[in-house]
Length: 205
Image 1 (tube, one colour):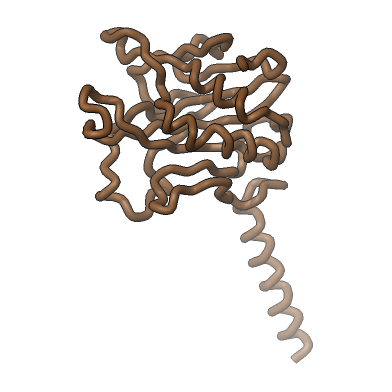
Image 2 (cartoon, rainbow, N blue to C red; image 1 turned 30 degrees about the vertical axis):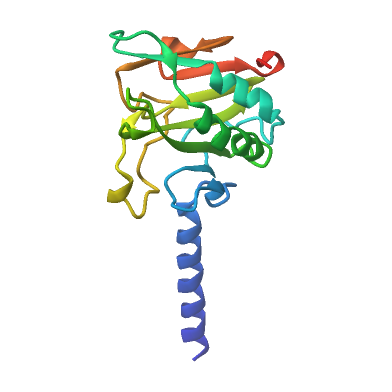
């Protein structure tokens, strides 16, 4: 009986160790900093991307400066149209403060991701709904913003569990091509049109 109990304990220990190995070392489970009641717009703190170096977080970013940095992001789609602001005033009002708050809570082993919805067509609020998503983190005194989808068509009526809709940006490669982005006072990382880097000490006001 004692031998049986010992074998059961060993098996249990192996199972527990295996479950722990699935999660990145030191990373907390993903958690929402903000989520719209309908679930379609959100700001999340989640484990850092695999093989990425640690971030310099928690990081203090003034919400108004975060808003100003986002407001200065402009984009062109395949250089066919003039550059226009990526975010509307409503989108900025929804995510700027939660992004700043999330960076103040995130650990070095975590990134902050977001998805925000808006209407940017000729018919204003009657235009089709689009989603813009990205990844945000602080490292080396820089605020990094990597975009995934940008103004991608998004039908809210088709989605119930939307956690996988609207892919955020990735360090290794672009999620989608077409949009080329620039930011006031920002530098493009590796000449990528989806990855902008702002100097924290000189964020716009």
